[in-house]
Image (cartoon, rainbow, N blue to C red; front, side):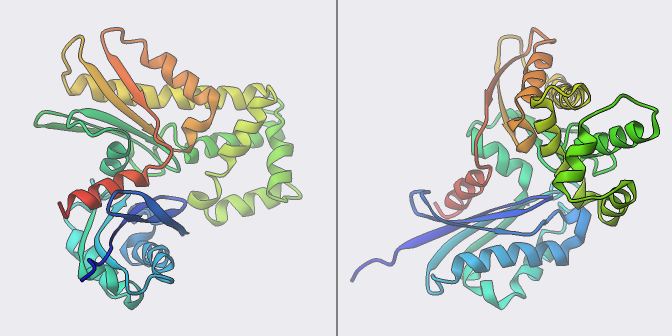
Length: 311
């Protein structure tokens, strides 16, 4: 009798979007689907689970009878205030009949931070810096674990939201005559089809956590065109992320000469200027030696963990 083919599902839930992938027993990705934002802190358990379930359901449309032996889902804020609510999250996911097939196998929910780290490194000791919609740094060394930054959208220095807020403020200062002129004003208005400052205000305040992060992409384009304000914002973003990494490394007490695995993931690192500033500022502490990896898809970490759960 022919053995039934086994599959795993990995999910990287983010503040802007969710990416779910179906992989075979060797970790090869066969299909990927996107869903809406799923930050537990920003939108709550019900909505986050709804968006994650929608992405998983798309994976299963053509594979309703697929033998999914393991599913691993990484959620933002799961390592903080939601770390004791895993059972509640699993129950909410199980309510969706469209994804009932995954519950025939193992289903785990955990932190997106650990998922991102495993996408770039398999060692037990190291640091991950996530700079996407939000920004957080977490590290491990022996029995010690630390978190730096990532205190929600009111903080999150270096994140796309933080960059977007800086862009918004720069446009307002430009408009008022309180600050330098910047091409960000014209570029943001054009990109988001805004006619005037009132339109900008209405757009931003309608949903700041959703509408400000995309400003970071425009900021990167303005920096490429040598806009001084945009360039400074991205430089400051890279510096802020580096400061968080250095703070984590010091708390973890790595020995001098130890090559610290550092996984850098998220859209902010795709900005050459932000990443350059990140690297330069990491070197300010010469006794700390980082080996940086930049995985293209953090969801690979979820696939790895899904496979490990059934070994």
